[in-house]
View (cartoon, rainbow, N blue to C red):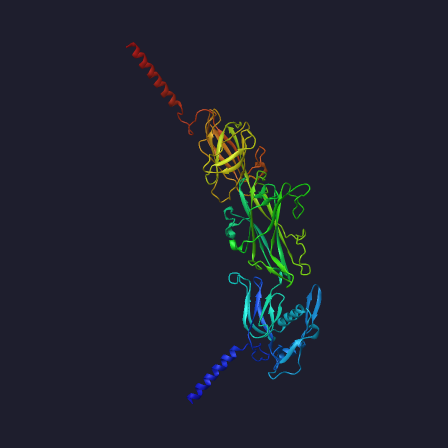
Length: 606
């Protein structure tokens, strides 16, 4: 009895193992015999976030006595359901109906399966799209007719090659759930199948950002990138355009990507002159997916076009950028093989990768001070191969540029008005400036004696430029960067020489332009006088709401920071709290002089 129980237990275990090895239909369907053979299906050019499912509809075997033909078989449940199924759907504002594309044998084989093949009118014709649509509807309405093997979803961190292979699949006729779907057969004669997903809707979003200048060729976190930044005259600004790519637009292979970049007149591209005596933007760094040497790709173009009356530079809304400049580049994305009628894509480029383009510009002395800042615009487009005319020229279509994205660079100015205690303008006051990092600032005067200076550089190894107030007492320093409101950095204005007959300021003045406002802060020096009319106390007043037109400066300057009424006092310095003042020094001097006279006279008498 014990031996019999042991034998039955072993048989039950074997039956359970065999049962687990056989894929089954959902409840209510027949169970087919175990298909023979094993194949694979590879999904390539996968779309990020798309789930791909592999579902077997019919099994595939060789008929007995025939080694060259492949026969497909369906269960009775499948046959009855498919014969009566009609798929109806809406497409382009019309109703489309697709009837059963298969025909079945009336007599089952010894395994109870029915041979199946395409309807005669579908044989040898390009009806795959129609059949796929039908199977998509069939799967949605009657999923129990399919054997569900597995699903896979592309994950960028794991599947960098954008492809996936489903292995150990029995021979059969399969429906692939992805986008618009696909149908494929794997048999003993063709055990492997490859499906290129061509269901992309074309490239996705793109962004335009400003990145730190020292990271042109390095990875940069999203937190470091900005849409608004600030800079000095002569500073280099690095821009980045990122396009979420695809290899297909629908079923058409993408041939090229095109980038167009346009600057306002206050910005200038960093260029070199090529052999044709043309200005070409350089460097332009282009990468796929990450900023690494192995991901760097080539481009053509990059010549700078200047705005002119014969060739005005227009934005998409028709606005002309007078004095602006532009460049276009073409990025080849694939080559086309006429023999196979297929495109070969860049070896390091896949759908859903990011196309990263970086280049540099300089802020020039035509830059707008504060106000709306200085704009840079970028847009892109792509074209596709035409299988019927693969040699056709590929040129950007003026009507197909994507929405322009813009970034803004602000630059500012400091304005100083030098006066005496009565508000009279003073000439000859000399100042130096250090920036927010305490570095000496070098400037140049635009017109000798005008008091208007422009930023040149900031260098700790060079002396700060001395700026001198003209007869108007007004000094303007143009083209300096601003600081964020929560930034502790400030400019330091130090008086190194007072006008003749006046005293130096006793301490430096701190100034801070705030990013993205016309007049960030207005500083006013107020003073109090004693009974003799001498200044005894000075107070700095801050007006942070300087966008108020009533608080605009009384001299003509587009500035972000105003320092009005920097006072120099005439005559000797007075103690700020009154008292005996200089009297004690006069008395001491008289006593000393009297003593000297006394000793001289006495010496002569002796």
